[in-house]
Amino acid sequence: MNQSALNRKLTQVFGIFLGMGIAIWVLRGFGILTFIPGGVIWLLFLGAIAVAILSYIQKIWWRI
Image (cartoon, rainbow, N blue to C red; front, side):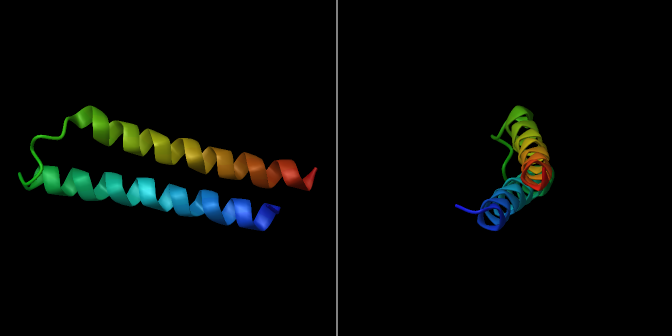
C-alpha cells in the first residue's frame, strides 16, 4: 500500500468517525437517541482526532 492510498484511507476513517459523532450528538440533542451515553460520543470525537493526527504523522513520515 503506497502513501497516497494509506492517507486516503485514513482521511476516510476520520470523516466517518467525525460524521458519526456529529450525527449522534445532534440526534441525541433532539431526544431521538437518548439511550446513547455521552462517553460514546466523546470516544468518536477522540477517535477522529487520533486518526487525523495519525494521518498527518504518516504524511510527514513519508517525506523524510
